[in-house]
Length: 224
Picture 1: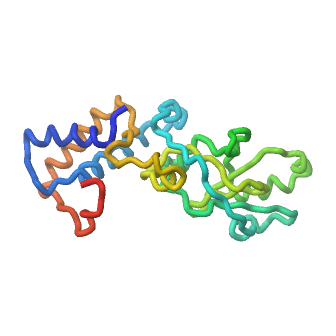
Picture 2 (picture 1 turned 90 degrees about the vertical axis):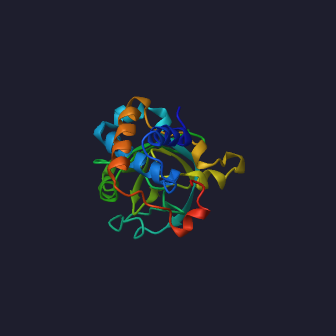
């Protein structure tokens, strides 16, 4: 698996043979790589195709939940007793396709129960069925980047998804040994796509005319 640093180096090494620019930062190069990566992945919009690339997905092993009311959970139509849990914080950015965010699984902490994704209105209608009291399935939905669970007494869940941003803060909060610099992280793009991504990135940089310099806050950024 290629790392973020190796992906940047592949592009930078080709650029050095054509153009040397002291203001072209790793962060700038990586932003262009990511832009084209997302476009090509969306071209492979069949989710089942993405699921076979296990390296594309990362797991947050302990997403903390808090109790909220049915208004917060967008389920005001539910009249029976129902408790709702919501992720304490917003989810990190999730990679989006036309059908929504690419989520592989949401499970209990011990993996013993998989949750099924739904929508608040669909769940509300489901609760009105006479047979619902026999339904042991657990459900979840996402609203405004929060994850919601109805009728769950759990304090946390696991979520495995294709994230659109770094999730090191979530992992570092659990175990400091998991913290690594961004350049050492896996570049979660199938290798067969990278040649095309590399060419698109090089073309954009070389035809941009001007290479933007870092802003004032970049001295604090690990990707410089």
